[in-house]
Image (cartoon, rainbow, N blue to C red):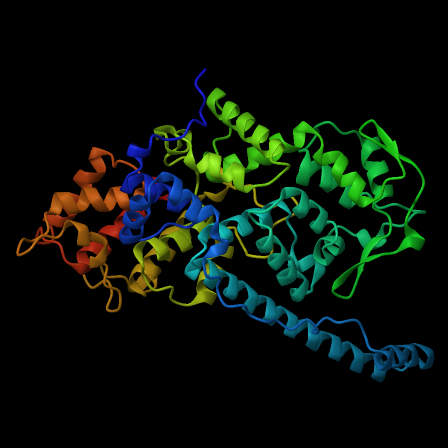
Length: 494
């Protein structure tokens, strides 16, 4: 059987391959950016995206760490006095102050969501944000459970800092992350009454995959290894008084294990590398429910690279993005766009205005992806689960809004926008003193927007649309064509 990870022949890396790479290893880009990436050649283009540390990072933004801080000594004294004296007025005062902080924290969360959305849209390091989004779904943590926006943004910064680094570092770090520790009740994991939540999810969702290699006994022993792993305020804290130092037996190995040793036992299993590479493959290559033999062979090869590199992610990503398999026809239009991919890709590819960030965040929520609030510790199901009658309606409407600035009920096909010039999308087709050819324009826009060769019936549909409107190409008609393309079922794929 042929090796699916064999590199794409260098002479086959053209404009359309570069565009595919930008979409999958980021959130797409303009035709000019695709041409520039193609000119670099395959190896340099992949390196440019994967080795993004050399590129300028977006400006940092500070958020308030003290909104949900622990009570001060004075506040604790007031609480004790209210309880001692049964002072209802004082209790109400304390409750109002707490509620005010909670309102302020929810407002900060909304600002963090908008900030991350803007960062995905504007970053010159798109793979960094794409990977941060991937790890956010993998090590899923939700704000509603922990109710501390600073813990959420701190976790986001941690995932970003190690997004293309070492998976072992990510695992060890997430076990010390206050947001995760609170989300999975590690503050309740004490030597006399171990809490199994973190140990279970570490095995089931973070490293090995559900039902792979471990037993319920391994989970119980792992929970003992993690006793005393908690946090204080905004930092990890190891409570030695609550840690069980006695011998544990985990996956056939015995010793006086703590949390780090427990994690390393899981990382040493072959199942771990296969599980992580399967998730990466489904995220970046093909999210079909059933894996083909070629898919499995590719995943096996990537897992071997991950183990050989001692869990360094860059060699895996480089191997994947350089492979002929990544660019194969069967892997085009093979991933359902997540709501974030849909929104950010449209803005980055069409270079249209981002409009109101709050509206984009809300649209993501309506389409099933609220940043910093995945539905459960399992993260988002993704794939076909993104699509239903309700989300398709929002998906089309948000594209109309991005292209025109108008809400759906305001949309006029031939008075599409007064602030977005889309002619740059077809600049490569323009010739001196010659009008744009309608068919050439339609075929190009379809292929660019969809990311694959358009079906003949789609070309016919759009040509009929143009014929009914003067059969000429101008800015408003290009925007109308893009709005029509974005309503096609295949536009939901990348």
